[in-house]
Length: 387
Image 1 (cartoon, one colour):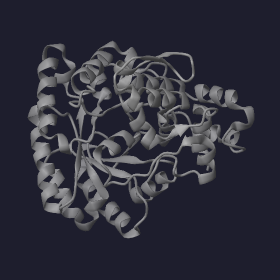
Image 2 (cartoon, one colour):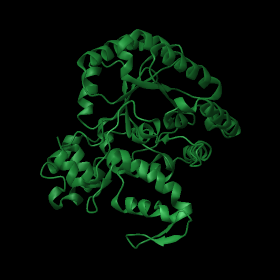
Image 3 (cartoon, one colour):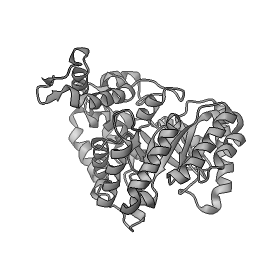
Image 4 (cartoon, helix red, strand yellow):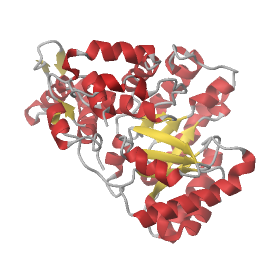
């Protein structure tokens, strides 16, 4: 699989200075965590789930979570498990290209039970999403994952969701974060990424952000994100990939502006028209939040609607300017430090302080590619949405 793999090779060549790299579910964890992109959640109750997964690959989806937790009613869990097993068995028989697939469970016991029930189809899974993760709750989930990994003989990753009230509340946050840090460090090889459950954070105070507001405008939430990145997102080798929070709104329907996108990936000078269409159809808030995610050290994003996937991926592509700066900073002859003018002659690149940024940028370039010098976000989005 690869990002923008659903568009033609000719279109990719026209858009990218360095094309997105290919990867598989067996790729190194550092590559997979950087390449999760827009992780699309889907309730496990969908009766055409297998068809949905195949269709979404054709729309650029690279990672999915099949949810047995908050997206379904408590009374539906048993049936949802049965449906999930049937749908994955169907996908196993089809032998088609699939995204990275994860299952969001409710209880630790579900992990080995589902792997056992899936049998040969369990190899389709990349891992499990662990809800309301704390040190106390998290250890049983991770031990269950290790047990299932041992029994199945396959690698399984965990993606803990940080969403508990103990993490939100000021009086318990530091202790809770310390416990989470101890736990994920102990099981580091099995933790692919940490996910932020911002909807649960807002729920604790009866809050809900509007389409015009980002998670960072909700001060209680932004404070938690900052503390999570502070403790768990460090670039000194102790940190983890932390993904961006979910965007709840999806009044946009791609068909409303797709007619504007059919002529060429470069829109024939109509980029401003598309920008206006995106803003009118409520993507402006999403775009701002994605940019704020990246500015604050988050990678990828939790998504609940297919229309969010390509904006996340288009904004994840490394610009030619970023790539040039990162290359300059990481040149072997710059190992001793110093300051240099950027290749674009518009900024200072200070080698030692900017090295961690440059290394992160090159990891992103490896999976999302580098845009050509004259290619911007709108061009990438347009190409990704054209069928």
